[in-house]
Length: 337
Image (cartoon, rainbow, N blue to C red):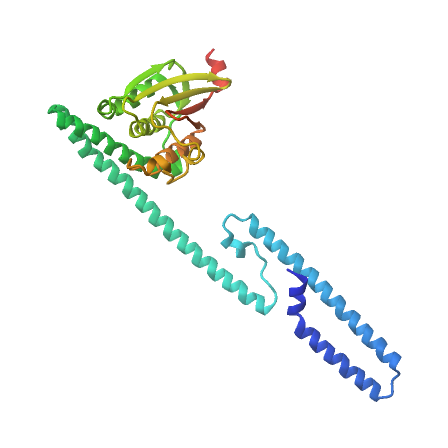
């Protein structure tokens, strides 16, 4: 609260007091009182008025600042009436009741939106599980009737399955703790499984796969890591060159195991590199007819953050390296040794 604003609000009170002082001065002078006596009375009145204005200003400023501090500490600031003291003045009580009504309306609206989101999320998850059945059936039909057409169709079905999995994991990414299981996994197993998930897509793109030094074990959820690797493999295919190659390898760096996925694709422009994990960011490469959605890397980063895994990207003129950093649990390692 500013002092100028406070004084402006108190102008009616000051004006009434000034009129009262003038009326009293005229009355006292008309009754033959000395000028010094009248001035003394007016000075006392003025001193009392100024003291009152200063004390009220300080009290209101302290109270309002405290209220602002409480509001800033609240995550849901529409709940401020719950921590406010009920005001004593009638005018302030009216505004307090208005705030309570607004709070109630906001809580009801938030509850309605949360229910709608929950129902929509449950529907999406159910739909994805249902659509997996015809996708699997089509893959079996194609595998039982091998031809150049069915091989191309199998690669496209893997793309469809990738998008359905992406939608499912996006819906679950808000509460990953309800759907993951941390255990010891062999990095070679999860990498080979991810390659198998994309075998037709990799075969169609003539991708050359190499893997080195994958004997390390880490503690994480293999299903979520497999999904993340599927997204990274899909990106490598999407942004590949005429002779695409993909290299998987691990490095032990201090207290972390680094799983690196290196390709020889078109690379990422330096100006786009800091933003590739932002939601919806497609960048320069995504605008060149590759149907980029800007969701894949964002979702990978979000899941890695939830799992406590680092995800970084390094790119040059040709090729990109994405690195998953798994922390080493010294306690578990010591017990095993």
